[in-house]
Length: 427
Image 1 (tube, rainbow, N blue to C red):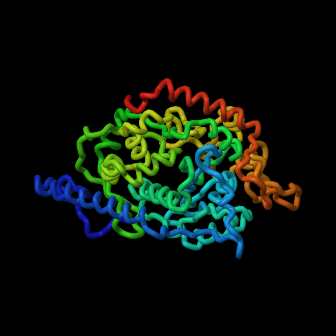
Image 2: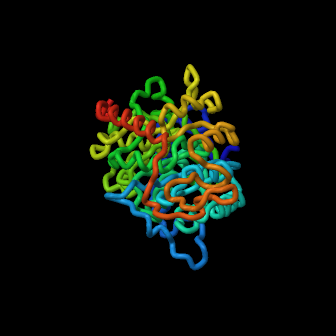
Image 3: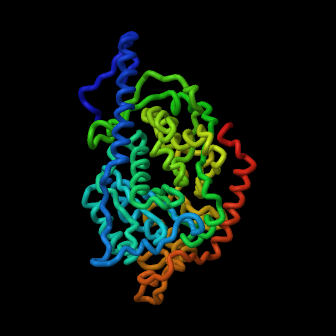
């Protein structure tokens, strides 16, 4: 459904014969105003004193247990997860949450605007009831007022930055920001991941990136769109301009996987913006199609402070068609052996209720029933009637399993590649 009342003139949106230079400058001014509006609105949203969310309550009268969590220097890393999904993905997000849950970590769950409010409330209620640790540690939040717009427009990027700002406000002591989708799933336990990351420099950011745009330059760099969700509540469509803009020369354009693992210092750089670079690129990527495939990549690779601490990998196992399509293939039982041997901590894409997920739960994660993946923090007795994670001891202790060996080998390999190709951002 289009947005009424906006028609294109020469070189504008919607087509029509050329209307001369005045018409062209009118559209340039329109895009500039929308960009400024987007940045100002996002800044106000990021620094809102009360980020809209559904906080999951703890037990009545109970003292929050998160005081027992040690983060920062000398402690194992704490991870901040953003888990995103669309309408109908509530059950998948809950399963993903429990697969990556650990009391040391922080979580924000975001269902897109096309999901009903009842689905969001149901997700929050089910997450709160899934394990007592969620209420005790109060480390899970469900976004109550989702970002409108379309996944291909800047509203998706705004949603990611908004979630990162909420995580900084709620729990400012985590080490890495991890973005996962309902189609993702872990292939290691959180004990495995935390243990291996304890030996990785917390300066590193994991971003699959390239500056080799090739024949996609016209589509990805020069094309302009306007996400209607920025200025019209509830709209999920976008306008595409017929005019092209020149390839920027003030910075180098990078693109890559939209799924990233970023350290807290870089997230603070993007949100607080103590230099102009994040804001300038935010205005530019406001009108880029699929900005999540380029914003963080371009900011980090154009920053003198961060570009030499970038690992060119998104830590995900994926299988692509030959020739590659725009999305990886859905994983099934035929991919199990290679998925396990690869060593990557996450994999995608999975269909809902894919039997391979049950095999990963049983053979790798040790998850059974409807509770979280057990770890060293779980101290309850395991039997048919009791989830061992209903009780816990010291959450600052992790106990890695066999898959941690493959994960460590994987991390050593990509870290060596990062050292060898430390100038990858400059290519």
